[in-house]
Amino acid sequence: MENIQPLPSPSNPPSVGGVRVHAQHVEAVMSRAHHGGGWLLSGIICINILILGCALVSGSAFNSVAITAVHRQIFLIILLLLTMLWMLFYTALTSRKNQAILFKDSYAGPVWLKAGLVLFGLLSLLMDVFKIAYYVSYLHCDSAVKVAFPVVQAVFLFVQSFFLWTHAKDCVQLHTNVTRCGLTLTLSTNLVLWMAAVTEESVHQTEIPVKATPLISASYGDKKCKCSHSACDTFREAFYYLYPFNIEYSLFASAMAYIMWKNVGRIVEHHSRHKVKFCLKGVCLGPVMGIFLVVAGLVTFIMYEVDVLKEEEEEEEDKRNQALLIHFIMNIVIVSLMFLSTMIGCIVYRLDHREHVSEKNPTRSLDVGLLVGASMGQLIISYFTIVAMVATGARGYLNALNLSWAVLLVLQLGLQNYFIIEGLHREPFIVMQEAALHTNAHALQEHAEMSIEVECKKSSYFLTSGADKQSWKRRVLKEVCAFLMLANIILWIMPAFGARPQFDHPVELYFYKYTMWTAIVNIGLPFGIFYRMHSVASLFEVYLIS
Image (cartoon, rainbow, N blue to C red; front, side):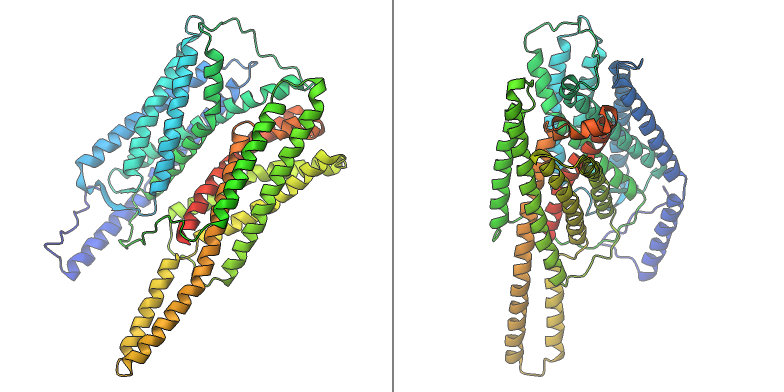
């Protein structure tokens, strides 16, 4: 890769033959790099780290296994330190060699994605602060590794956020094999951190159902180690409430690392990308309805937290059932409105004649893959619920509402996936307008000998008419996207912060038995939660394109 020559300066333009020879040289070097062993080696590294991490994380989740949380945290500390060392090496290497990065991917690492990464990173940093304060109070009787891990993770959050903010668009051309291996190390580290956070949060969320159900008696060990101050419970509850943000941070970082890995050695054509700005002008109904749903959803979620997730008592059974009833009805209303608004958006797509984007884009391909893959988690839970409800007859209003909610979720997920994928693959409206302007300008130039005044009036009329026809489509699509973004946010908040109707309404628990149903929910629900947040990001992109 060191054989690549620097690009010629604008002050000394090369000849056409020189440009052609230079392009062929770069293409040959890129071809050799692409067909090297870096792709295979980096993939092997990623798979081995993920499998080992999955085994350690799964083993440390159960007390009957001789793998403790300390062993898992030692493994994670080693991964974090190696990843930080590689990031520092990459930053030093690319800053010293001008030929290391000849191209930039304009679609990778948009500002809103970086801003989300920083926001989730700050909240994750706050989670680590609470963890440090919590585990320091147990140093007299517990391992110091539990304090060292959040300290190292806090440093890692800072280093990685800076690294991804400054290098997310890089298409590296030097030391490609080492770069690919380093990026897969970063990717696998974030995915192992995600698995560890999801497992720990899931175990915490299922503690109450385990204690409440007579199907199994779980042993959590004798808590002989006592806290040295009175704020331990407060710190523990605080960092558990921040787990969803840490989970999303790991997934955001994994996605950005994957795009960088795909862009290693890639030659990007230098074309101007149309700048689009976020603007709410003319968009009213969607945001208003979305905000109303968010507020109503938060109210019902707080009622759910108060009446269902606290320790159950016999005299409060009716109150719990009432809270579950309101929770089911609220979710059915949200999902039904989302289904109707998405159907309106799909109808507008049928009336819209924008062309599909033909350019290959790793970022868009990843968005589509994550969208479809993450939706499988919620689909699995919904279909298992449908089978259990139908098999048991769906007797009672709670069972009927649960069945209706599951069916509506299946329909809404499929239609929303189609709406988002179709929107991501359409040309922006600004491109179509510019194409119309260029076409009209050529027509005026060809018929310049005719009456210029008449032609200008006609062209002005047709352009204005075309803009008006497009404006209502743009307005409808923006309304739909704004509403779906807010609706997906509230559907992310409720399960991410503790709503578990899958356990609190125990029909599926008795039908599938505790072990099987817990595995289904704890595997499918994290993907369902990520799906909602990823849908918000994808809908924001569709909003900008519209």
